[in-house]
Length: 419
Ligand code: ASP
Ligand code: MG
View 1 (cartoon, helix red, strand yellow):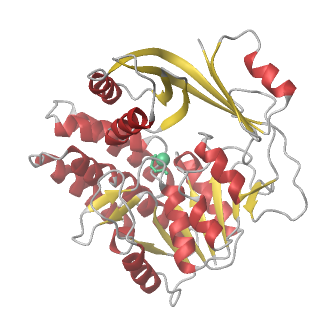
View 2 (view 1 turned 180 degrees about the horizontal axis):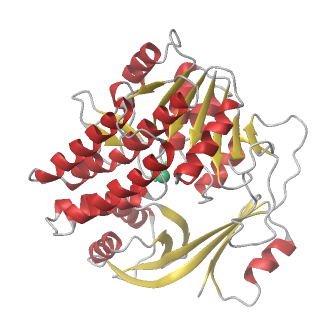
C-alpha cells in the first residue's frame, strides 16, 4: 500500500486537480491520498481566523473570498452544479459561515484550529468528488475521527496508541482501494479539531504510513525533488538522487524547507522509503529518502539559507563569567517562550544566540532577559548552513561578507552573516 501526499500548490486550480487525477490514475495499487488545503488557502484562513477572533469588520469579506476561490475551482471541474456532491460542499461552507457568526471563545489557538482546518476539509471533498467522477471510486475520510491528538492547539501532539487503534479500523481497505483524507488536522478525544503545525501534511502522511506499515510514501511537490539549495536562491541548484533518513533529518533541522521536520522519524523507524517527486514531471524519478547505502556515500555540498535572523548577545549584569548557572537560566527562558535556537556561541563573559526573528514574542523574551543580563541584538541577519562543506563552497557563501559568527563541525559549517 502507498501513501501519497499532495501539497497545496499541486491543487491550486481546476487544472491542478485534473493533473492530480492524471497522476493518481497511473497507480493501480491500494493507496491513501493525503491532501493539503488548496493553493494559499491556509494563509487566507489564518487571516480569517484573526479577523473573526478580533471582531474585525472584514470577517465576512474574507469568508466570501475564500468561498469564491473554491467555487471557481468547483465550477471549473463539475458541470452539474446541482449534483449531490455540490450539496455536500455547500454544507461545509455553511458550517464555516455559521461558525463565524458565533462569539469567539477567549482561546485564540483553539479558534484558529476550528477555522483553519476548513481548508483541508474543502480541498479533500472537492478532490474526492472529482476523482470519483473521473472513474476512480474512493472513500473520503474525516481524519479527525481517527488521528487523535492532545489539545495543544496549533501544535497538537499525536496520541499514538489511540490513533493506531482507530486508524487501523478506518483504513481497512475492505471495500475500497483508494482513500482520500486531510493532512495537517486532527481531533481530540472530545472531538475538537486540532492542527499539527504549519506545513504539517507531510507529517500526517508519515503518521499514517507508520501506523499502517505502508510500502512507500510519495510526496508530490512543485520542485523536481530535494535540491542541494533552494533553486530560487541559487540557480545552479542540483537535485539529490538519494539521501539517507539521517541526512534528511539533519537538513530539515538546519532549516531546509523540503520536508516537515517531524516527518522522517516515523518513516526511519520502519524503514519506509519516501519519494519526493514533482507533480509537474511525474515520470521523473525525484529524490528517494531511504536507509543509508552500505557503501560510503558521496556528498555534494548542501546550502541552507535562513533570513531574518536575530543575533542576540547576552552578558551577565555583574560582569561575572558565563557559567553553567547562567546558561541554564538563559536556556530555560528561551524554552519558556518556545523559541528554537539556531546557533549559539559563548566566550568567557558573553553568550550569543541566533534565532528566527518571530517579532513580538522575541521582544518579550528580550525584556525578560534584560532583568538579569545586558542584552544587545542585531536584526535582519542571515544564517547560512553548509552541509558537507568544502573550501569552494565556503568561499562562495562568505566572500565579501562580514561574518558575525562561525561554527564548524566535521560535516557542517554555519555562518551568521551581516546584511
Ligand atoms: N495546509 C497546511 C499549511 O499550509 C498544511 C500543509 O500544507 O502541509 O500549513
Ligand atoms: Mg499548505
